[in-house]
Amino acid sequence: MQKTSSRLLALLSLLQTHRDWSGEELAERLDITSRTVRRDIDRLRELGYPVTAFKGPAGGYRLDAGTQMPPLLFDDGQAVALAVALQTAATGTTVAEDAARALSTIRQVMPPRLRHRMDLLRITAVQPAESRDAARIDAQVVMDLSRAIHAHEELRFDHAPDRGTSAEVTRRVQPHHLVTWQGRWYLVAWDLDREDWRTFRVDRILPRTPTGPRFTPRALPGGSVSAFLTSRFRGNDGTTTDWPCQGEVVLDLPAVEVAPFTGDGLVEELGPDRCRLTLGSWSWTGLAATIGRFDTDIEVIGPPQLATAFADLAVRYANAARTADPSTREAAGPAH
Image (cartoon, rainbow, N blue to C red; front, side, top):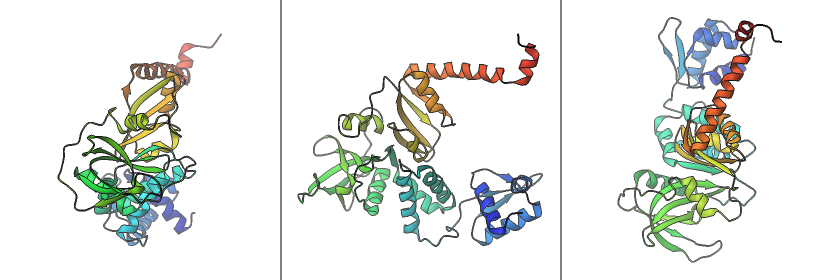
């Protein structure tokens, strides 16, 4: 029998998997009685975790978002800062997988107002961080830029073009996306004075208030943030590899969970639970197999060779599944 503290953690871990659990299922997974499950659920509620019960033949439980962040003693600003730090850590560090899971756990128990602030960030994890200096970023600047992007409001800000320079230039832009690229943060925006797309280092931005009028977002060159940054940064230190086979897909997974495992691939956040992945390989079959390891629904954007490779793999896997089925082998008779 598990100790109460470790059992509560195990119970909480199951409830955080974004599914409904019947009391019998929880009792079986934890090797305890249904009565103990009910007592432990009550203990979690006393700690502030919003565990709700649903009706059914056996009854069940789910973990909902609550009105506070139990049982951690963080104020609103600290909670958002922690979430931002974990989202950044989930891009190419040695603790990427743990950071991504921690971020998902924290977001699950955040009250709606804080989850809304997190979703406003719209940070795109473009490429894992390499061994280059990470510039210090003001969290308030990140939040101000994110808010303007979400509201489609023009921005004015002072920008220092080069490291160490004191000559700041005032820019007027229509902000499009906030991205991370190899440990540095950038603002992708349409420059109103130069009438062209520009990429600005966030650590060199000092926003001015108030923001400007609302605008209708323009189409980004290349069709995606990933394609745009690849064209802008190609040829510089730390760019992507020119693979003979390169494809683009949409995955039903958060960008922060995909980016740590894509090597030199590009990951663009499309929403809290969807992202666009651009990845290369030496063969189309190898590329399809690599993308398939993410174990989620896949939408192929292109090219057609990648879709064909997925179809070929599907046939091979189906044949492999049939040969592995004992009933199929018995029906076919003994091998000769």
